[in-house]
Image (cartoon, rainbow, N blue to C red; front, side, top):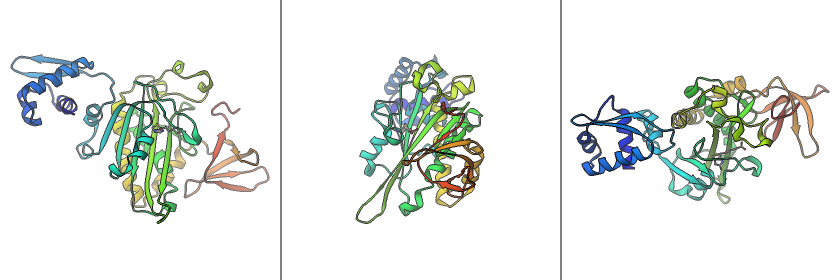
Length: 328
Ligand code: BTN
């Protein structure tokens, strides 16, 4: 924590900041400041130290630490309850296990997950030093049946965060895969808990996995037509902490909008939805059905028109999109 706070001050400072000023600001001893600076240097930070002037941060490694992420958050978001792990099994599982200890809108971030979970029991590849794995817990005072649209809002928020950080326009594959260059760069897993006696909502946990700096060769053969990364689409490396902060801020804005009933997110979802206007295969227990995705309804449902002219609005489940993920 001390190291994170020293890093934030070094990043905020324009030029040099003296060891005395850091110590005073953080109510630390000079020895603690020296130790924190030495530890940052051993983490890969380049810090210039000039007698009589103090310290100046010259360059930073691409680390996903509390100090790095907080340094990119605006002042009003620095109060966000943020917990950062180097390695964890799954940020969603962690929040589920500790949900009583976390308040509304708390966020858990990890550099690496050993048991990353995707939808439908799939695993989510979460190697260290390349991606972002983060989960938010929400405790709105709202009936569970009124939360079905939450995952749609989340998809817009994640794409907003990526757009803000990288200046690129991600698309959304219904229901909530984030697509860049026809490849999946991010997935979202929203889990909900309802108390069985009262039927009251206990929490929503939304986990976001983002492939940030992977190259094509980092993905296994079977994912080569499915998974990509933001840096592959951007053509350059992305600072993960900055992207993480942008997503945190866009999720905060989204949550305010969702609570206040702002439906503009549905329109933005529809505009970004890569599924619309394409041939799709709706995966049903009774067998797959091919149709044409014509649009998104007011509740983020996918409107599919079949060959006989009938229409169906799909609210959950899997839909393959022709031209994506190897479906030809
Ligand atoms: C999917 O595409 O199927 C959803 C993937 C969700 C992955 C994220 S990574 C952070 C959080 N922790 C998990 O175990 N899963 C989600």
